[in-house]
Length: 236
Ligand code: 1GP
Image (cartoon, rainbow, N blue to C red; front, side, top):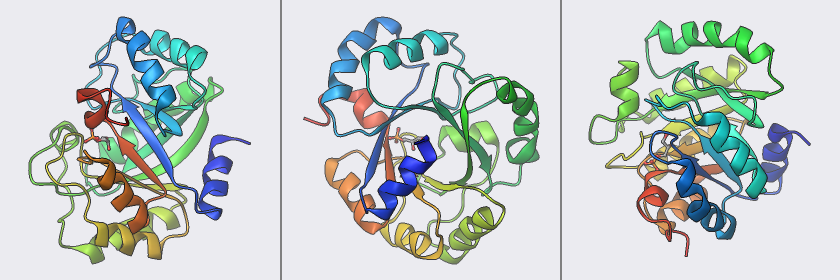
């Protein structure tokens, strides 16, 4: 099965998924020997690789080692078209549909498409929806877009629906890495009840209860970045 089929099958069986997000700017190849055993002991089902800034050139090397020493699928979660590596299994081909910046809606995708065409990566079109989270996050400043209001559930649902109708295969509700406030559970539920495609939720989730809460609210896959970055024993 390809990545997307596995996600759909998990959703059908109501098996919840969990991704650890590794930001290549924040980890070194040397740290992997410590991180990998922790990842292997964790309940994670996927590894996401990417970040808003990523300036390092170690993507290929990092992923090669992760693929060698971890059984988990490696999915690119790129902040821009430079973050593509053929060593990964797939890529969330993101369009920032909460924003009104054409660069992040379509221009980066046009730039990336011919590069992706030459890779074997499984491409998963993903409607990326940024939700206001208390403070300005990197996604907001880098993309120069405004997040959707936390209280405007109708607008978030309409945005997710439009993403689905445009053909996206996943919707990602993002509070932003290191967000003060995670995506509210009632918003997750409202979106999950309105779309048929799988729902990813991430940003500002820093406890195991937070993961459970997001899953229970209707997230099919929860993403943990900062919490694991700050404490490799997070999942113990
Ligand atoms: C960010 O959703 C991810 O894109 C994860 O966020 O770093 O806050 O866990 P955190």
